[in-house]
Length: 315
Image (cartoon, rainbow, N blue to C red; front, side, top):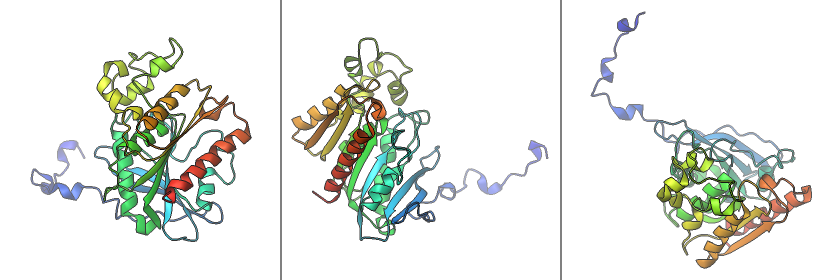
């Protein structure tokens, strides 16, 4: 049928009720059917937690202890990928061969894990990613009873760009609010923390703060040097207050992508605000824990798991 012969629905004129076009509330959508990847773990893959206007629905995976052990604490893992790419359930190449995997291990220890999508820099610029993670925290509180989780015992954790987003969320989410889940701590692995000083921390000539094609520029919508306000706003080390939760900061001393000094900057800001911080430079480690032995990678994960358990327990 030619386009000009397509019948027009008169109900979709100027008076068409826009609320009928609104997506369903993710707080009331049915949860995915569970899988059981290993005994003692229930996996809900692809639960929709937010539907941003003009963007794809955002999903999260949930790794839950089974059988239910009362309301369990939650670790929210935020994936890396330079804010440009990445998979929500990927902790990096050093962990892909683990059986059971890292998230299943945490669930077996009694800590639930949420692994959310967020809008990448090719879809939306800062602060959209922060908005997405805040929406996840609201969703976790709304669905706490359905999931068997405690929304007042949540720890954020991320690697690389995901560590940056985890830290930024932990430092800016309303603390103790009745809306979002309560963040009790944050773990960062080799994360950028001060986008205004990357050029200082890299070897000379390695990072150009005026280059509009860097991953940081694509996140901000302009080169950091040309957008100082957004660069400061997106820098966790510059957003620290005395109300921040405890932090664990791990960073390789030989990181060629995100200099180890970036981890130091966040740790220094937290110490200056008298916020508990455990800063762990990892000797010889490059980005993604490249260069570490298997035992070294295991130690990074074990230290993280121990930290997750402490704030999740309310300590």
